[in-house]
Length: 619
Image (cartoon, rainbow, N blue to C red; front, side, top):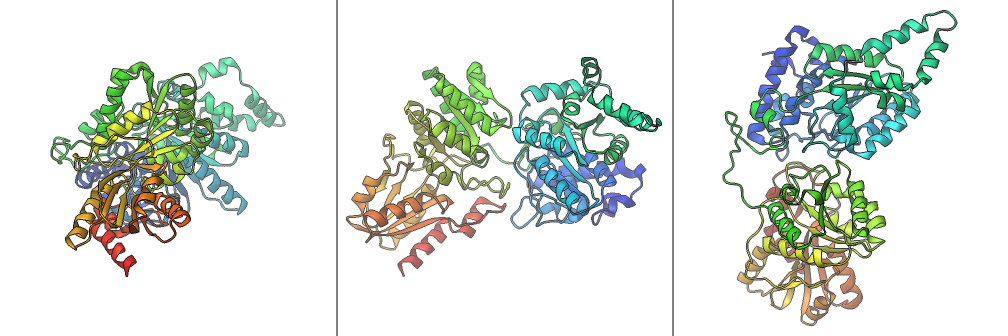
């Protein structure tokens, strides 16, 4: 096997070009077999096998810097940089990350996980290189989907202004997680059918410069000419007009063509955009036919492509999806907004039922929030459905454009808390802190499936900024006997005990149910509270319980700093200083990838660790 010769970075340079197609086949086979067991991002990685091989052939690692936007498509890069033998540990606790990690390999230039930042990071690397007088190459690989994010254009604009040597590769597979939207998607579609514009411009420029005395002047004049005729006939003029050299489009599965073009890009003076056309899921029919299903997949049967897990359980996302369809029929002004993730956020059904009230704005969370603000001012009731970790990208817009104006915008914050295998960049551990600090914001967290539905109903009827945060995974159906109406700022007492009160936020209610049962077996009778409203906090309940409770334990799947526990402790210190408060939350750290249950145990949020914390606090 050719792949057996790859032991460390740059070993690819020892492999004959004639063997590259076989190497690509072997890598694809390895990806399919491995990801079928571990789960992961398959379709995107199958699409960039040849692209990655071609890049590794023209670059030297770790001297040259390669930055993958989002980073979920870097599996082949990991295999070619000495991590082949550890690939079976992908996304497993203590194993390889599903994303580039500088701590994992010196060949990973930048830790990525979110979208549209690769050009900015690469440009920073480039300027540092120039200032320090270094000579290596810097390459940023960004997908056409990530180009719907505004940060990418800010960086392109800056790259043109700085005009330093920098290679930007557009991996154009015409599809990110869901179908791409917007003007850039349309523009790139037109380029896919254009005749290749590769070495023509470079060759003409070189020949003109050789003309005695006037050659350079001619080149400068030509560069300044931006006639309508030229724009009609030369592809890539959007980039050219920004001051970036455009090369392509090139077949992203033809390694010889790509290597030729990449070597040309290395000779270009200034920033250059190389447009590469790839096919998601290439080489595996189930993934190429249904790339959205294999964007992020669990273990599956290689022969059929079908998931190995049994019948899919109802998730919180499913509950939200049903609630949106139901409420959309009642409230005709209800609208739904997603940042390029209609499937992941559960808005596909709403889109089918109410297409005129559904908006996919592309990978543009900042725009999504302010767009929602405009909808609200125009008389609509917008719901922004977004993962917790991605909502971080729009903190200023939430604060400035929504909360400051007290607008009725609903934030459906999915994947709140730990998400597991995707690791640090995707754990939703900060939303309670940054949302509760904002004036006028109301923040809720449901204990189970029924309560999520009811909280969405409350949010639609409420008049002001409101967020409902809920976790990834199976919706908890327990404690279904407790169905008190959702009232603003009111918690729900699940059991009235004495002396000790346990106040759990959202999905921590399920875990704390076990904690309370264990404590009762030990002869204690804790009061058990479903917090429901993190903001406004139910201070009346604290006042009531402070009369006959000496210890208050708060439990949340959020960082401790700025979380519910800290707010509760501050209130009790001010109003009931004799009571003691034990906030149990995530300490000041980023949580790596792993199984959620195992991670809970490690960070102190499992039932046994919560009991241990209470015992130690009481000693």
